Image (cartoon, rainbow, N blue to C red; front, side, top):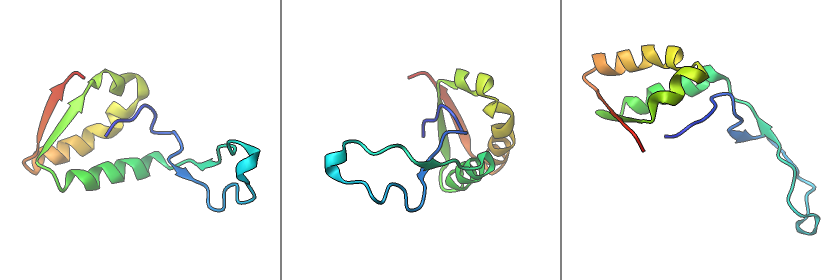
Length: 89
């Protein structure tokens, strides 16, 4: 999983751009933002099914503030016997 901004919209709004016709060109973006806690719950749920997490280019964690939010999730993952591998892409 790669992410640059946990605040970025990830799902299209329900009923978005229903009146768009192909001749109109590219439709405008119409997205709903997810709650960052939803993203963390999704990561935690995905980590339940794996034994190894490969964390690439971890330098993005600190400036985005995700590091503090992700730390308890990773701590729980490690406590369950998971392993984190750090690497660069």
